Length: 246
Image (cartoon, rainbow, N blue to C red; front, top):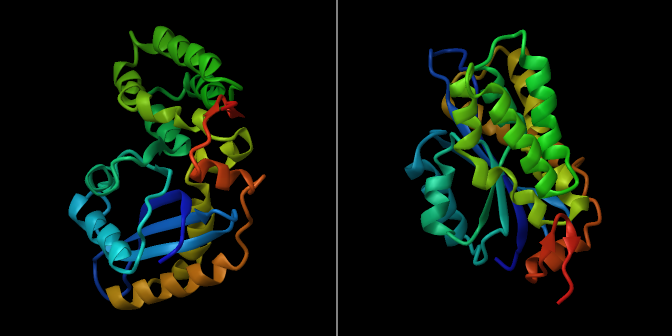
């Protein structure tokens, strides 16, 4: 209670169990507070694509006192999280993770064109303005629509939520274009669980992941220009990363 999160990063991560064939999925939420510090918000045993699983997570946070929704949530488009958030916190902006989106789009293209396609996608989310990003977006569709319609459809379906970061401080773009705060932490967690050849049960897996994540949390860095987080929470508007004068 009393906490205000400016950003949430969300993901569902699978782990192996040593004694069974199950692959439990751990639902994770990492948040950035108004002082710019990142912290573990939730770790939950659930299903990645399940709206119900994510609703349980969000409602549990509410029961524990979370009264204000984050301004922006960042995650992969396949998560059931988005359907849950549209009901529980409909005013929270959505940002699709560009790392996940890039991988999903390139997976539908031949290896020969992937380097040039990747460069064009990179140009979309590294542009200094939304207009420049959309120019690269249109160029991608014009170039690849005929031969790779599935890749183009994958890109088009999330257009409205791929460029949300342009409405937030430019200093924060490096943090909010991807789910890297989760990916980088849980790459290490996965490595540790592989070394132990997986845990023996779902409870043991959840416990180990929680303990390792809490340890990693001690080393998470603050948001750049963290004082801008309070402005975002207070409703200050940004266009192409620049504060708009009232």
